[in-house]
Length: 174
Image 1 (tube, rainbow, N blue to C red):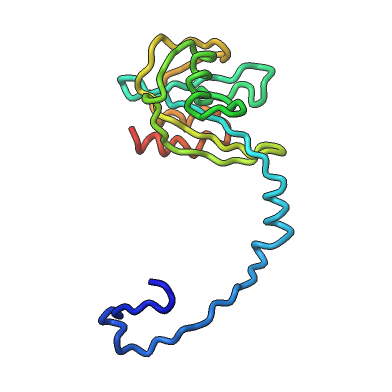
Image 2: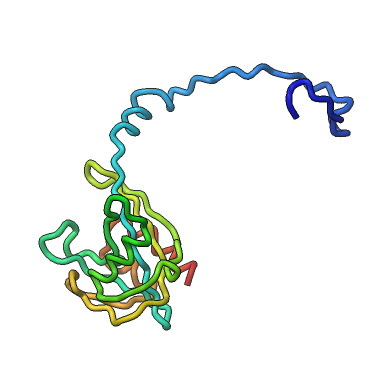
């Protein structure tokens, strides 16, 4: 209804003594400078798409980061950075082909969860997809090693901080 429209009041309001209180904006210090403006002005997201490849036995593929790269030696989900103008699904399909030599389709990628983690002067936004269908046999093209593990086994692996909260979600999904 708009102002001036005639309409029937609901029965529970017909004889009530409700008062109309004028709306006044409330100043909230948390939403004013410096934090809010400084954070938003300096926010530079790093978008990454990753896959939890699930085999027929319910195991997840993880890869070990090679020497000479950031977080070398840590185990991670395969995937990578989105290129400008690229969708997360297109980036993930490209990365799986480049890193593992496997092919999949966007319809085989189910969005599962995400992680948000400060990363130097940027902020990582990691989008995790579950994939149960692909073509080819995964090979460690850019990684030191690959291994298939159950989600509970991931707690014993050295993984990047952003990946750790995703383990519980995978346990619940599988």
